[in-house]
Image (cartoon, rainbow, N blue to C red; front, side, top):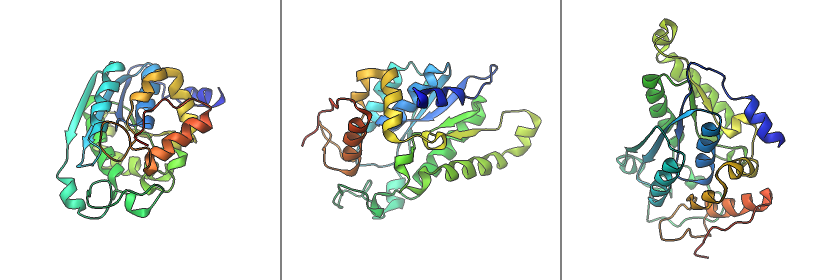
Length: 241
């Protein structure tokens, strides 16, 4: 309850603007964040990116959760050309590489969240949203673009990029929000989001690979299993192994 109260106290209070742009991958964390802002009384404007990832299932699951949350809008953004630009830099877009079961530097997709959040901010400026949210949490700290200081600095830069319009009142300054900014781990976020979505969270897709079932072996599947264990919740996710 402490974590939930802490999050509730920090909802941005702006009665004239209740729009939140949320980057939703289809995974446990981002879908939980979308549910959190929905429960806070915000209208959801969701963005899901096809960046050439091996796990195209996550896009399908993102659509399901978006419908469940009755999002005002849910855009699937095709930036699959990024796969060519990324080349062999990471295992999430390069099918020739073996997927590790624990964190390795080649899991990092170079500044992926910077790309997503920049597009999300452009969208937020067009609809007058003050909140841009994504699912990074404290357990994600091996990933540089999931750290709180990254979100803060990126928000500063993006606001600066349209500062004249902000000063003129054309649209508000944005805040990039994440569970990590709020000081929450993956399991703490899971407890909160499970209280909102319940068993529908099992429909989320964490696996870095595609298939009819989540593999149960990759780093992300292992993190998912651990989060349920630490949260004291039964994991009813179906894994291939």
